[in-house]
Image 1 (cartoon, rainbow, N blue to C red):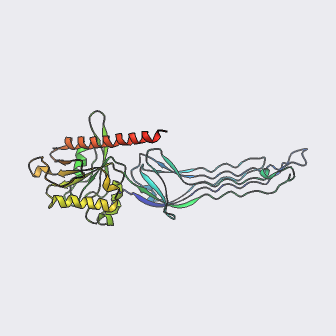
Image 2 (image 1 turned 90 degrees about the vertical axis):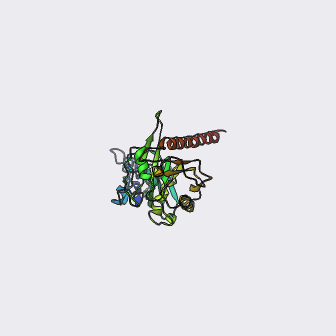
Length: 341
């Protein structure tokens, strides 16, 4: 397979805090110096940060254990130990972090610069100065530093795209993406040419653009792991709109459409409710741009294109942009209503 890695397991450990110090002042002409033991320093956190320069979790297949610095111990003269340095793990935007032992989702980093602390450092222990009182003027108590959190976590990348191209192998997804964007997916006349998702930015007039994902072919049983199955179905989850691509040389257009819808619904009922359209590809084989008859009552449109001949693309892209704009406007309105007192 290519270098696209979208799921890894790693071990992370935050730094342990430094221990407190037991010390007493030793100064000339101060024979009964009081306690001056400082506190230990805090350990370092383990932080996951989204980095838009990354597109895969490949780096975490070479190294799987990460540990932040521990805090330094306290010292005399009420000196607090230095805190340990945090360790930051860069990941692509759209990465979900899950605790493998509990199954809990710790969080996700969606946008460039988003951060999430996945293992918290231990605090430093108290030195003997902390325990001094009017009746206990020479304490010898101290505290050890707390241990940092240690976790076994899963990093799972789910691509963020506005529109996802869904179809069986050789439905024309890669060809379409290569024509409407600057992406260069592998294109050939045999099944499963696309072994990893490809993203492309589709430029429109007026400085408008949206992101399209070309996803590996979906076959019957994909939701159970057949073909490339579950390995890439997860990447459809974050798309806002789906385009079901059906080549006109398919044996049964209706059966192919119904099969794709069934696989999506079997994988995720929520995913099945996303807005979608039907796109007939390779329409040049029929000699016209009229979409064939198909029963798709929940689709917001049925379109016919020829990516090779560059026909019907403007109509399709305009429809996708219109639907995306509608979704964004609706989301903004809901966010505004939620902010009202």
